Image (cartoon, rainbow, N blue to C red; front, side, top):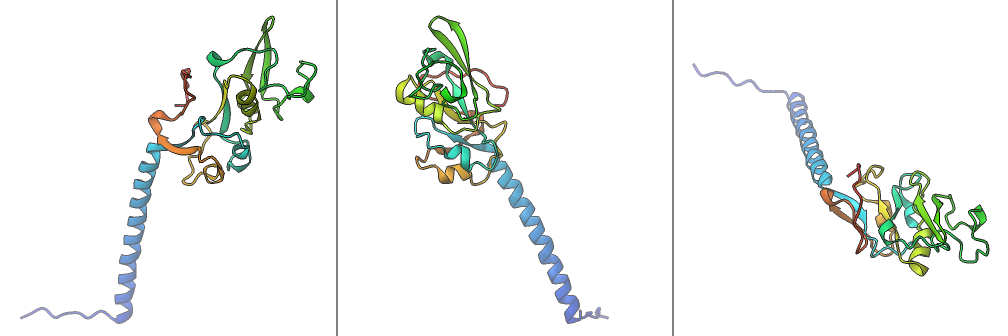
Length: 195
């Protein structure tokens, strides 16, 4: 005797159908996010210092406060000048460390006497807001030993970087995670712990 077919009531049919659709949607979303996270892990945001115009948008447009963009100092390129144009305001008459003489609005550059007439300048990265004022001064009148970089130990690696969207020089790009930093020509980076 043939088995009798059991008919599902219309409501039960739609309920089971919606459950299948919901399970498929959740599974598909999970798979998409897993693939997206893997793809996103291969590339990170970085700033090309050769294209950067020091517009100040890195300080104001990053979702982090202070910004994940920090100034990097290429010591091998630095002239250790007494009158550093990345440290002092241009109209400074007296070369001392008074706040009104400093170009950096948050005093993130430390000046240390080496020997007459040389001084060493170091960036205090936790204080740096990424405004680029010192970089602009250094590139305009100095040798360009200061430049901006996205620090990946701070960066959230947002899907759409708000600084990249606002950057007038199109200086932000996705780079492979194993080559996270883009450097100025002629600069050899020291080893960093954050990758």
